[in-house]
Image (cartoon, rainbow, N blue to C red; front, side, top):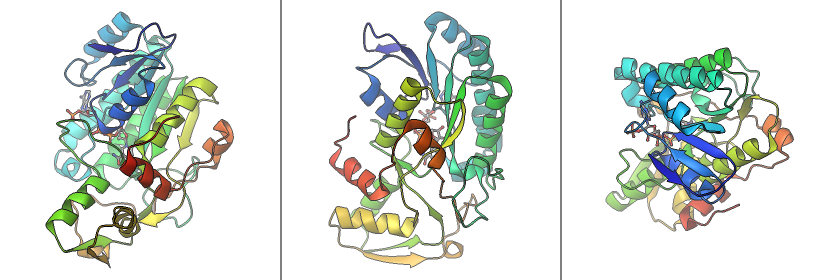
Amino acid sequence: MKTGGKNKKLKILITGASGQLGKKIIELFDKKYQLILTDIQNMDITNILQVKNTIIKEKPDFIIHSAAYTQVDKAEENKDICKKINTFGTKNIAVIASKFNIPLIYISTDFVFDGKKNTPYNEKDVPKPISIYGQTKYAGEKFIQKFCKKYYIIRTSWLFGELPKDYPGTNFVEVMLKLAKEKKELKVVNDQIGSPTYTGDLVKIIFKMITQKPTYGIYHFSGKGACSWYDFAKEIFAQTKTRINLTPIKSVNYPQKAPRPAYSYLDKRKIEKALNIKPRRWQKMIKSFLSNKYDF
Ligand SMILES: NC(=O)c1ccc[n+]([C@@H]2O[C@H](COP(=O)([O-])OP(=O)(O)OC[C@H]3O[C@@H](n4cnc5c(N)ncnc54)[C@H](OP(=O)(O)O)[C@@H]3O)[C@@H](O)[C@H]2O)c1
């Protein structure tokens, strides 16, 4: 088990540390905290004994639970494994965190909503997930609420950031940049509305949660401003000065295995007030990602 940083007051255990968000947490927290980096190799969250033994050994002051089965389309065919990780893995984390009275941050998703609204989703809106991924993440949220008193559930959307070396997945920005090298024209859906979020900005929010300790509960966070995937792609190409013929299309003409909410823009007023922050516009987040210059 790797331990980053030395002689730091707070000891923070991260699940899913080898993932996209994990990479940014390590980069931005390594000097501030003593980090306990866990992943499926050394602490499979579906194995409660492994979780318990790790927590007993490491005695963290805080847990950031980022591990998840995140392949939204594959989840439709791999329901059992997705549920085992996102729901019951999260239950294990919740049970053990609560047993040892350790505050927990759980990263959840806009995909808990069905997208039938056309005004921003706030924390009081009742989730009604339409995909397996969304259902399993929402069930994970419910276990956290059932077992823990000291928890923050942060729902975010359309996450992108620098990818770890040998990372098995990808993100939308990387996919667009790769496709632009291979194709002269691209069609991207313009009838799913949400908001991109840079991992750097999300880690800053996590930092503020840990340091400012607002009231426990659910919070929404994403980039400021609603857009479609088409708008997102257009901005990526504009900022990278990529010449490509980009066409907006409807979701019905781009079938995907998992249904997506048509609208999932998150209302961020609660977190803005609690942490006294102003989320950056998603266009600025793309700029930070492309220049890989972000610190706080
Ligand atoms: N990506 C998005 O657009 C998005 C949007 C909203 C919310 N979120 C949430 O944000 C969090 C971070 O997302 P991300 O993009 O960083 O995801 P990610 O890159 O897929 O990271 C998740 C990590 O969890 C690990 N993991 C999977 N099963 C595990 C297990 N049984 N035990 C321990 N670790 C396990 C994965 O390892 P393997 O790679 O080996 O499977 C991976 O390293 C997730 O909880 C996700 O649901 C993501």
